[in-house]
Image (cartoon, rainbow, N blue to C red; front, side):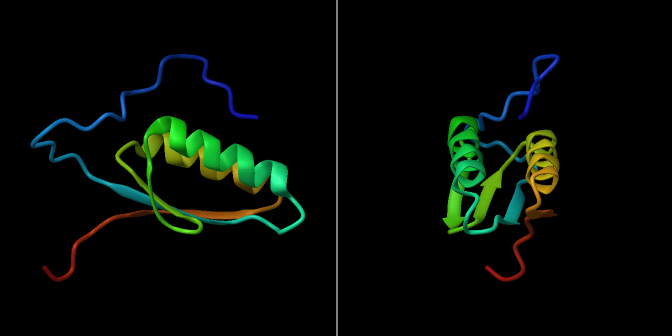
Length: 88
């Protein structure tokens, strides 16, 4: 379970915001639906953008690292990477 001891930084993006975006890519075993549901609800609550089945985008690195640690502690796999545009 993920507990916050203090108020984490805001993840809401404003117009013209140039903060760095990060991606979380995770794998949770199929029988562990409770963890998958908890992770998806948490990401939606944070305002993350779902890109693929297990790929989400968010500006808050702190939140994604905490969530990745939570996923790993339940036996899943998770990685947080910096989003970078290669070709536009």
